[in-house]
Length: 266
Image (tube, rainbow, N blue to C red):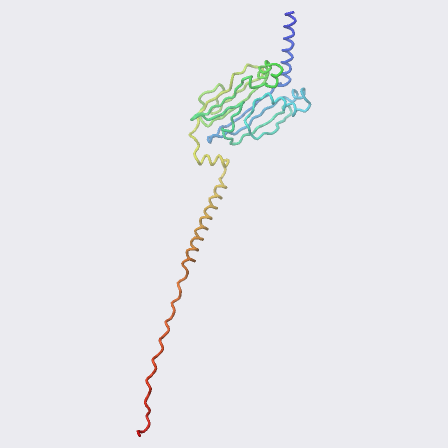
C-alpha cells in the first residue's frame, strides 16, 4: 500500500513538473537600465518565451504568451510593444526618462534613498508561478528554477555594494535556467546631489531646448508691454490738450465831443 502511494505521489509530481516545463520552458527576462542624474531611468525590458514551447500550449503564440505572463509579477510600466524573432515571442517595454517614483513594481525596485540608489529584483518563488501553483504549490519553485534572468544597471555614481558583477559604474547579473538562484539581485550606488530646479525643468522637457518656456516668457513680456501702453494712453486722454488762449476783445472807443457851428455871428 505504501509503495503504491509513493508511486502515485511521484507520478503526480512528475506530471506537475512536466506541466511547469510546458508552461515556462526557457522563459527569459532581460533588463537593461541607465539611472540618470535627474532621478529618472532609461532603458528597456524584454520578457520572452520560446515559440516552440508556446505552440505546445496553443497554436496562437500570442494567446499562449498572455496565459504564461499571468505567472509573472507586475513589471514597471512603460511603452509596451510586441517582440518577435525566429525563436522567441514576447513583449518589450521601453523607458525614456521615467521618474524613479513611477518605476518601482512587484518585480523590480529602484529607488533613491538620500544619497544612495538602491536596486533590487527579488527572485522569491512566491512572486512567480502563481497560475501554475493552482495545480500544486510546488510548481512555483519549479517555475522559478526554469526561468533565466539577464540584468544590467548603470548608475551615475560609484557602486558601493552588490551581489552582481561590477564593471565601472555598471552592475550585471546572468542567472541561467535550471540552476540555483539567489534570493534577490541587489545593488547600492552613490547618488549625486538632488536635482536643481534647472535639472528638473530639463527632465520635464526631455533634455531638449525649452521652447515652450521661451515662448511663454515672450508672450508674458508682450502682455506687460501692451498693458503699459494702454495705461499711458489713458493718462494722456484724461489730462487732455490745454485750451488755446482767447484773444481779448478791445473796448469800444468813447464818442467824440460835438463840434460847435462855425457860421457868422449874429
